[in-house]
Image (cartoon, rainbow, N blue to C red; front, side, top):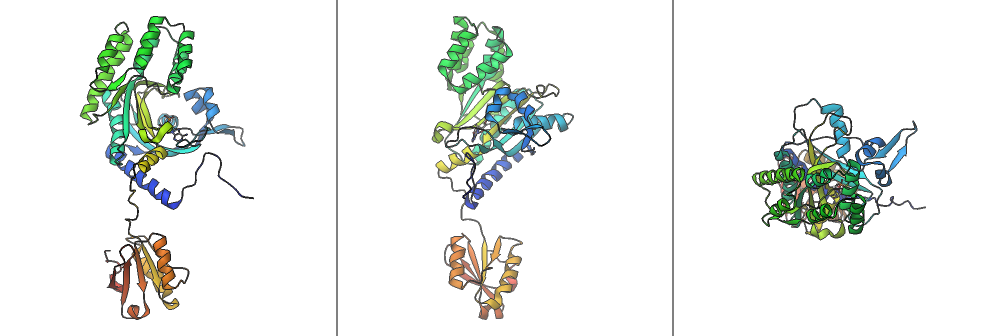
Length: 426
Ligand code: AMP
């Protein structure tokens, strides 16, 4: 019998893990540079955390189960709810704003396809405790600077403001539940379902026309989108307030150095309690699953039983970021790392080879041959495994306190003293 991986999951071979760790460390570096600190939460949570956040229908997309104590648990489908729970449990009295980031695996029961998995990784940040436009602008800048640090070229930032849609709905008496459902439908992009739902809500043709016009309002920064929106919203004071807030966020974004984006008032972001600025980043070369990041301002702390607190944040789909980088031929610094493979020409020096490897390990990754291979085979193995250097202990040289270091990429070799192992720079 052959065991295979569960559907929608992946194994990562060493070369893949090297890429992932490399990208992860660059991302961590940018988060650090913005003053965000890392947290970790459990892989599974009480099911209720996610149904409270996103409604009972989320269960369809969850891996959930009962444990032996009859508790309803779920593998996390994302980390925002968990981070908000952590904030409520541990950080409510800490100075604000709190700036937090996380890297973790998530699980969703979805139909697997390219860029869509049942186990995938999210890297995200949350800024908790500021409702100022600077906060919205900062998280957008953090997301974009992270991608800039990775040198991802083909990505598009779209920014909208869900308060505008909500303002129109609010002013026309659409209940909270219906608003959430509508956001879900807009997010799915199902045109016919959307029009049918708008009819069901009993909205007048005028209001429907305004909503539709707003949903399709999109354009580069200087294309007058905000002016058009202002005209459309002339009779909607709440929506106009939201538009004004949006304008200030975009102004702040300039100061954060983010200048290249599309204003897109049709972003709704599904069932996630988004309230104000919302944004998505797309990597055009990824096809159907091109959204590599989604975020915005949301209101969740009070929904989960904490004190009302403004929050904004985002999550990258880490796997999709890697895919997008690969599509652009990103080098991942492969093969540039110095790694030594130490070998002896005969069995009598095998222990000395182990000792030399140990001495090198203080500064570089180093292994010694533990298969008693002959030189030729050992060199071949070292090349195949991608070692940059072979250290060769030959009987005659070693007796006189010398050993050979061969650069396996160029074939060049040098002889050094055995007492230089700790100081040798390749
Ligand atoms: P969401 O929590 O749905 O806003 O997702 C945030 C990001 O996670 C998305 O922009 C995607 O890049 C990524 N993502 C969501 N679902 C999956 C999945 N099933 N497989 C891979 N990446 C995903």
